[in-house]
Every structure is written in C-alpha cells, then in structure tokens.
Length: 124
Image 1 (tube, rainbow, N blue to C red):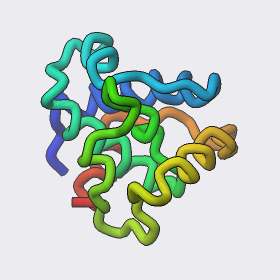
Image 2 (image 1 turned 180 degrees about the horizontal axis):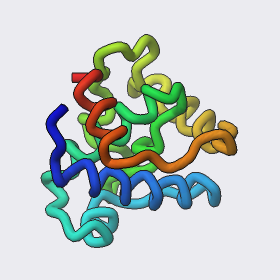
Image 3 (image 1 turned 135 degrees about the vertical axis):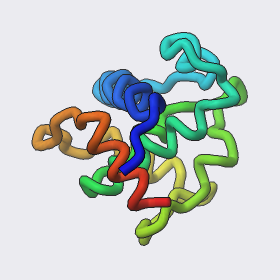
Image 4 (image 1 turned 45 degrees about the vertical axis):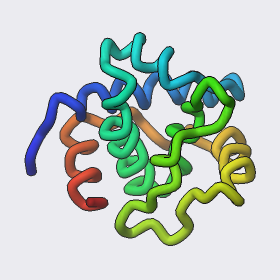
C-alpha cells in the first residue's frame, strides 16, 4: 500500500467535515483549503480519499458538504468511485446530502491515515 501526505490531510478533512455534519452546515473549497494549508485546486485528491474511506465503511461522504462560492459542489463530486453502487449525481445530490446529515455516525471512529490509503487504493 502506498501512503501519501494527502492521507493525513484527508484525516483532518474528515474530522472537520464531520463537525460540519453535526451542525448541518457546509464549507467552501476556499475555506477548507485555508484550514488545511492546501491549494484549493488540489482538494479533489483529498476529497476523493474522504469519499473512498466513507464508501469502505458504508457511510455517505461528508465531501458533499464542500461547495463552491456558487453554493454548488464542483464537477468532481459527481465522479463515481470503483465499487460505488449509488454514486452522487446532480439529480440526487440534495437528497444524499440530507441523508448524510441524518445518518448515524455513532458507530464510526476516525480512521488512521493507513486506513484512508487502503480505502483509496481499493476505490481507484
């Protein structure tokens, strides 16, 4: 398994976005990039890791809480990961985001960067 520095940033992103999920709130790509100390243009690789880990534990991805200034997610949100049977689409995005907010995460612990790397490798 290949570890990347992005796996640690994905862990920080998961923690931050799960806090947002608790308050039914969102964050812009720019604000997330500032919090992570990462270029906004490079967030897709981090958010893909977040999505892959969530897929591995059968939870909705909190990456749905990251939006552009327009209030909509970027096109990358709509790319399916390998093994994903019900990918997020423009048509189901709002419904899936509400599912994320309502989903029970009490049985999910924060992952290790290694767990994120393994999930990402499996979903590529």
